[in-house]
Image (cartoon, rainbow, N blue to C red; front, side, top):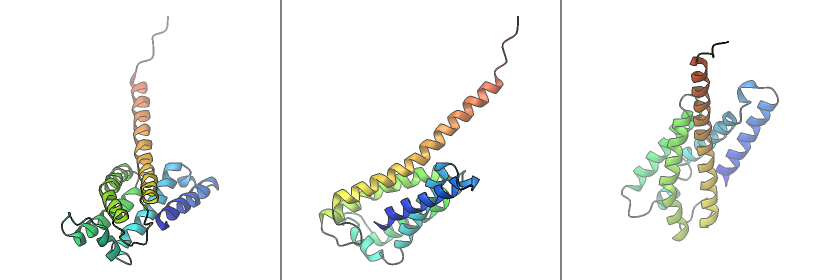
Length: 167
């Protein structure tokens, strides 16, 4: 529940700061990127400090080297969090993190169905709902970027179109 709380609280704080006049934080995608970055720093750090053994236990036995998989996913979460903070890399980082969320979801299913004790919910539906929120947030960042690029291209094309000749 801490990752969800972190996402929501940091995003709301950044939205409030934007509304209070911090111009850089005014657009909602910037606030959402900040909330996601804070959440992925929290979860990425947990791969190394505090919850490492629980996360290793969540890896389905069919996968090799659970410790290495937990390390790699933690590094990717931390790198993705950093990438979310820079406008140029944010859509790529968000897309990568969305893929990572999908890739690690089987570990959540395995843990819930096999009674692996973790700091997270032991029930599949709360885990699934949280993953869906995280996935939706990352995809919202990607979607906003794609819409903004489409608008920019449309504006650029309009500025190159010659004005109609007058009569």
